[in-house]
Structure formats: C-alpha cells, structure tokens
Length: 359
Image (cartoon, rainbow, N blue to C red; front, side):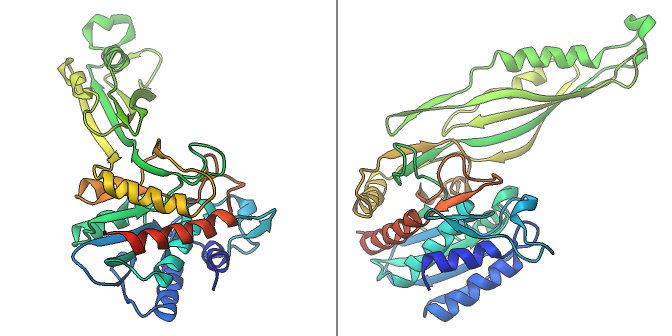
C-alpha cells in the first residue's frame, strides 16, 4: 500500500468526535504490514516498536481531527470526502495530520532502523494533547522524536524544513470581584468592571518574552480576548471576567500573576500547552541531513508558531523536532489539502532519519 492509499483510507475515516475507527484502521494495518510489536492503550493511542539498541527514535503523529465542514462530509455522515486534484489530496485531516501519519507508518514499515524505532499516533491532540499526556504519564519516553506536524513551506515554498522550536499557548481567566450597588449610589459599592479595567492595563503593559532559535526570533505575546460582566444598566457590577490568550516561548513567561496584586482580582490558568525547543544540535542536524537528501531543494532549521504534541514530549525530556508535509494555511480549513509529492518525500525523509539515527 502506498502513502497515497493509506492517507486516503485514514482521511476517509471520521475521527473528530471518536477516533476509535481510525485507530482500528492504523492498528490493523500495522499488524498486517509489519512484524512489529503493536499495542493500543486504553485511551486509543496506537503504538508500534521494532529494532534494537540503547536509544529510541519515535515517529509521532495524531489521528484525531477538528470538526469537518459540511462540504468535507459524504452525505449520510459515515465518511469524509477525499478528492485528488492537481497532485494534491483534499479533505479534512489530509494536512493535519493524517497524511504525515501515513508517511510515518510507511517509513516505519520500510526502515531498517539504526536503533529502537517507535511509531506513535495519538488521540486528542486537537483538545489539549490528551493522548500524548496519557502516554507520557504511563511511561512513553523515547529519547528522540520526529513529530510530523507541518514544516513545509517555511523557508521557501514547497521546501520541507525542520522545525526545532515552537510556541506554546497559555489560556487564562482574570476574575475581578466587587460589591453590587444601585448605579445611582455607586459609591456604596465596588465596581468589578473598573477593577477588571485596571487588570487590562496591567496586561497591556506586560512585556512578552522573546528568544532567538535557529537564527529566528520567536516572540511571545499576551492579549485580552474576551470580557464579560454586569447584570443590568442600573446596577454596579460585582463580577467581571477577562479571557487572556498568551503565546509562550521556551524559557520565561509573561508575569501575568501581577494582576493579583490588584484588590479583588484573581488569575486562573485554564490551559497551558507547553512550547518546545530542541537542545540536541546533532539530532536536529541529522534530521536536516535526511530532509536534504529527500528533496532537491535546501531545507533549513526553522521555528513554528503553533503548539503541538512535541511540547508535551519535550517537557517530559524527549528531544524533538517537527517535520511534516502540511504547509502554512492548510490545517483546519474548508479546503484543507496536502501535496502527494511531499507525502512521498516525507516517507523517504523519515526512513532516512530512522536508518541513520542514533549514530
């Protein structure tokens, strides 16, 4: 089975609410096509292992997707639409990231690995890394990982680069509390919206950290994105909530906790997707060599703006890079697509990396 055929089968299989059937497909394919040790854990992660040695390289992806557009679902809802046009596959999950999962599976099958080689496709990446976190908590700890999220088209159109760092995302809530009063006697209360406004001023004046990675500037950001408060036109409000979106970078965080110095203000972290940075230069260069050998163009080490499961793995001690077929602007769109030629390139790239690392 070719990478195009396997991608078609995976994309055709719905997995935005329940990844079970897509996981079944992957598990059955690995058992049929390889002699590897194949396992499926209790949350649905699909894992396969082969090779020997002291160090482990993992090819990592996820087989869940975001909800498809109506145009991406076959009438009746039992299948997703998959179409081939002009050398590309179109459909929900082609770019993010069933195409790369298929490429990793084919490469895993075909490689004669230099060490222990693991294929891992997780569930729940789109909802906070549920599968990756479960696997890590239960002992998944490869020494190195190539995470197949998109890295094509970063240094130049059509070039499959190697991302050695990405931003994380921390989402939080600022809650300002006051004392309710009639608006005609506002001095009798404490206006929660005014206290929230003071918190907005603190956020606006925060300096988000910036780091230099692979010759690129990776800049964090912090911004208030939502506000809710008040109950009526003539009532001084006793509660107001702000939502904050923060893009984090490896190292320092913006000092959002400073808002709690204000009277009546609390700060709660709702989601914290970690950033990633590869600290092993030799590993990054080895994957870059594999990428260079798999294409006529000259790939580069780059950074990526989006959080991925590489953040969870890196936080747990795995040295990670990101290398995959998806291009900027493809994931999560109604016209999502991936280049077939780049998928074939990724098969070659992953195989080359598996056969040359660890050195």
